[in-house]
Image 1 (tube, rainbow, N blue to C red):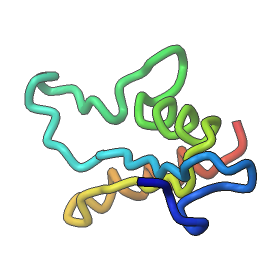
Image 2: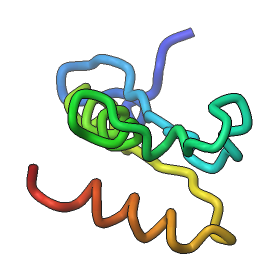
Image 3: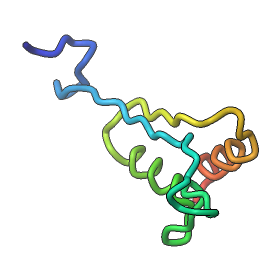
Image 4: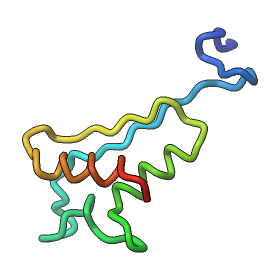
Amino acid sequence: MSASSSEQDEQGAARIAAIVLAAGRSTRMGAQNKLLADLGGKPMVRRVVETALASRARPVLVVTDKRKRPRLLFIRSSLFQPP
């Protein structure tokens, strides 16, 4: 079965979306929130989203927990600020 033209990019490759799941409770990390954990000077969630954006995946979606508004605001400001 071949992909339809709406499922392919300009070069004929299959279109792939990336979904970053950033709504967990981080229970295995103890008190530290894994989304905000420092990984090479940046929050882990920023590294993950930057990697997804650097790929050919489009769209890149980030799923967050709307009940945790302060974390959501941090993620938004962290991701969409120039490095």
